[in-house]
Length: 279
Length: 281
Image 1 (cartoon, each protein chain N blue to C red):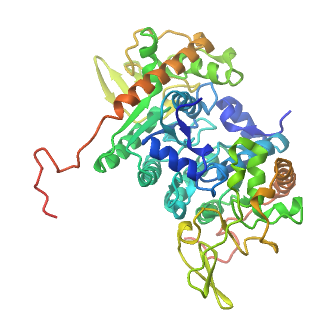
Image 2 (image 1 turned 90 degrees about the horizontal axis):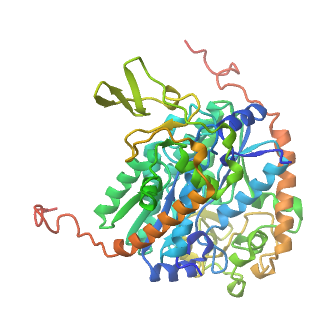
Image 3 (image 1 turned 180 degrees about the vertical axis):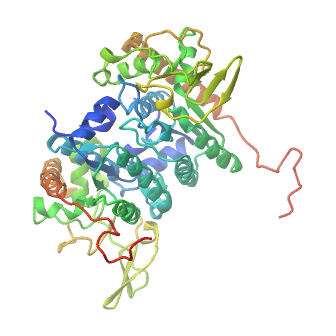
């Protein structure tokens, strides 16, 4: 017996009961974007959709339909990527949250499969905070170390992401072309940590490149993304078994987190006595 | 063996090959919104996704992922509806179409599951027309009569929609509470043809209601939206067999349509007609 609900499967009277029973909502979001030569374009939304589906079985939450498009314009040098602008994504998220609040929702947890969405999600979080709604944004690569301390994401379409897709559907991975990528340097003295971070001597500056500027194959290294130390792990070392363990680990962590997160209440912005009294 | 391609399942090198083989792209659109006491809130996007899936098996097209949200703010008086504004929807559609044009898409077919999306899709179509890209919006429920002239949509969550969902996911349909609820009247003399149309004597006018103004249960009759003459048909008469006939029939129709649609070429605005040669800047 599932403890949570998938909203899309409910009629409105059933949704009404579900919103009366729990006021924590989980919104999976991703992106349709290139994932190197070996992973499918749907990777970033298929993975959080699966985490959310499993989470609904074990946690008393309402899971909304998955948003398959995010902000990924910097991937559009590769065919198949379909991206919103950041402003549109932010508006879309707020539009949907606005409806959720009508139904009594008090806590929102985004399960995000794509780093490029974080600015828009943060802006939506600001909007929710002004309405006293705690909002958490969980990206799976910040949780993998709780499953296995040796699992640290090292890049776009890396061995962990490969495992996650294998765990869903092995036919979606073209393993024979999976190979550890190398980022191109911008100049001999400027090394690209990822498409947005350039290392020069001891410091790092932000730049706004397309992924195609630093990789021919679409997959790329992301140095400093997590606590990883070993950046030589081949994507082909990912397995279906690792994928299954990945989903279980994500859900184990999120089930516990959500029980803690439910307890969070936030004061109104003008209630703490720091702002001048409104007239 | 499927003739078309499902973008989310392809790697980018596979997508590149697919865009080289075909430049017709199918985008499913829908909504997550209340569908009366008997149908799930996912109905509109689930049906659009299914029509697109069946079309992708039959025609050499590229099917993209679909946005599960549409413009349906007037449904948010019933819990479970999640909607974006028309403005947001328009921007979202234009932005993803902008990416498709980068990959050489020449023709766009929206397989639409929700009437409220049509304004934003028309605006997207204007944007595409300015770029010489033909785009059409196919709303599946308006095509049931192509399959069987007796089948005409009569309303929101009607027997046609029930049939489609019975074919896709019967466990999500609660037939025990399905009933043809007639629309509320605003006054003795003002009746509602549907959410947006008020009837007074022999004339009608547009009106700005929300769903609870016309129905207590969320389902609603929509007079004049199709060629229907009988508005008494119970939703519970929709069957999985009928649903499969409609979904396959619409997919067959669209597969044939796509082959004709491929031939459509639009000339640049201002290149012919009364404005030809007029532009100076």
